[in-house]
Image (cartoon, rainbow, N blue to C red; front, side, top):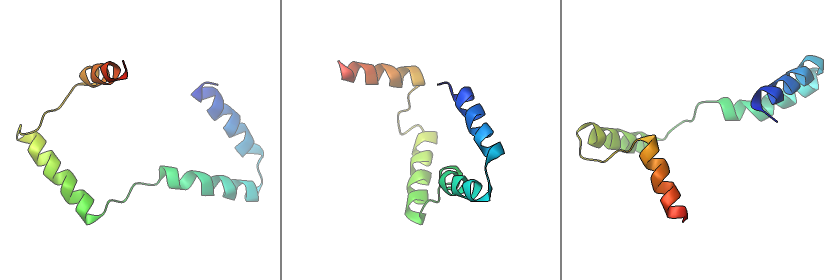
Length: 75
């Protein structure tokens, strides 16, 4: 089932749902949509990696390069 079809089907369920079903759906969906909270240490590590990347001290790859590396490791 395509994503668009699934969304339509779920939307139909939501339109017909009572309050208890809507609250249950909200309970299931809210954590996956909520923004991830990083710890102080995680933020520091990301800042360190960003600085290293922007200074050219770390290597970065295009999506195509990444995909090729993953495919070659599968063989």
